[in-house]
Length: 242
Image (tube, rainbow, N blue to C red):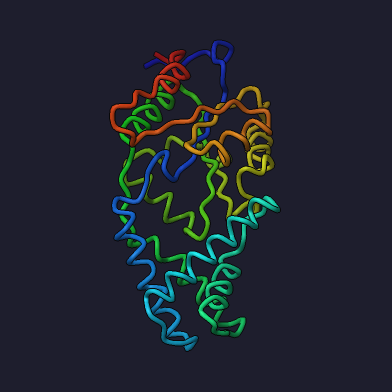
């Protein structure tokens, strides 16, 4: 496929959400179970206390709910240290700042062993866009997942090189999270493109669509794992590169 002349492109930059758009946990139930077991071991190893899986699970869910509320209320990305502190609070324990820092660091490594499956249709569109010479980026809330680990997942599918580093924005790095429009605006500024020249692809009406819309960016929502559902809007959105 030949590169499209810049003046014939309706969009100069296409950004993608990661989770549930490009990839998802291959087995969410098993993945969450492994994460809770590792967290249980962390709490024990760091001397916080010995707790049942049920207690750790309840604490994790409560901490996650609190983190989501913080994002909704402030638009800011909670630090992994704060997330770990919340888990410790909800299990009824306590820890020193040193343990909090060490626990947060270990928590970020959990995603190393998580297995992801990719949305083949999205991967195909990424390759088509790259072949047409379109700049590509990532705007994603990554919670406590280490960004480099997530980028390695993309490298495993040989698509990481299609993305422009300056157009990659993880909430943990930026300190802000979708739907805060600032995370989108920062990418536009770094890439020197107007919001009207950007298209965002995501799966969430709240974080992706509302965030992009508020930033003045067009967003197309996709459901790549919905069997029998044709992503007609996605195909239409990319008809200009066919």
